Image (cartoon, rainbow, N blue to C red; front, side, top):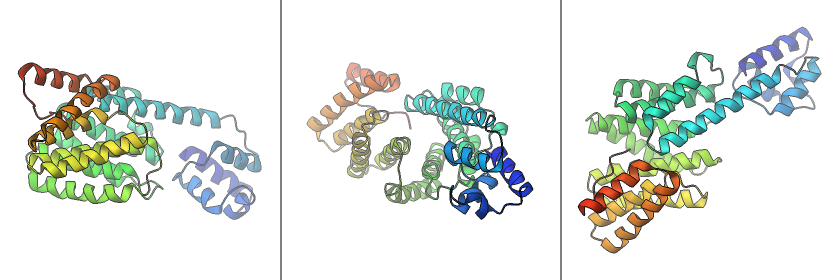
Length: 295
């Protein structure tokens, strides 16, 4: 997209046009400004209209559009593997399919760093790499003022500090992500964002459960379940059911707990979360209820 923006700017100047003159009847001047700076990606129809006004050939446009579609599919598969706790496989797939130095769009760069951070943290427990990539996620700015990846990276920092035995630092990031998640629900507009925000509710539930605040943990699970059901999503439903059942049992609400654990099994089966199914089967075999070991 940066190459397209530079080409538009070069051609606009060669034609002696201002941004306002180029935009007239097509789009807002700000759209031209963002395009030339590589900060945003207008629709294909808009770019074609801009190219035609400048007398540029549109043939090369489609290569860039195809590349963006390919990245979208790659990131979707990465998210699926993460939801199934296949972190090492997810990281291998990410680094095989995408080379960071070839990315130009800030949104794509931001996604790369976030998913790298999640996978290296939960797949390998390499905390320094996780901190590095989560920090880069937060530093990479996009035109979306309320980018849900900032929330996810903030929460990821909390998980990383907790797993690295730094609870005080973890607390700071969990409280921050708790504040941000309340704000995010007003601005989230995609199913992808809604799905991943449900995972935030799960990690907050686990965090409070560790501190024996079981009622609060149940409340966060309920919010995550409600969000998944609202958008008919199922990727994190299983672990949310499990975490709610786990905390209900801690509160001695045994009948309710059993219902949610049964729901967790069927949800895990549907979303192909083998890790969760194994934990549930082991619990049944040993007549126990273990803390779900995955974040």
